[in-house]
Amino acid sequence: QVHLVESGGGLVQAGGSLRLSCTASGSIYSLSTVRWCRQVQGKQRELVAIIDKDRSVDYGNSVKGRFTISRDDAKLTVYLEMNSLKPEDTGVYYCNTDRAEHFSGGHYYTGYDYWGQGTQVTVSS
Image (cartoon, rainbow, N blue to C red; front, side):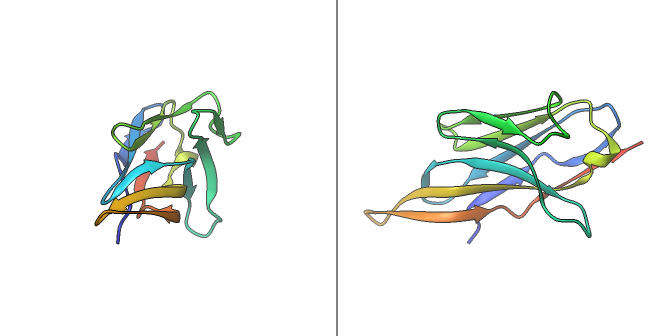
């Protein structure tokens, strides 16, 4: 079952911008901390940005000053605004949440450590 869906990836020239979205689906009504991570083939997955429930944020050193993470809890969506993109930003971008609250069939339950399927970002030089 897919709980998080990423969108917004694509091909962009260096210096350009993209906005990624991560939307919760199904019976989820609340998300806790959400991260954006990226993976380049042959390398470990790297933390790009993180946003807590109270909207405190932090960024990986390579994207500070260029990327902005935000969330709209009413839409169960977390965004990653990426500006001044560089070829080294190329990769598959995934969103992740530590904890998601569900309501289904009259029952509340909690799910842990969900990942989306990823969206490809390619930055050409």
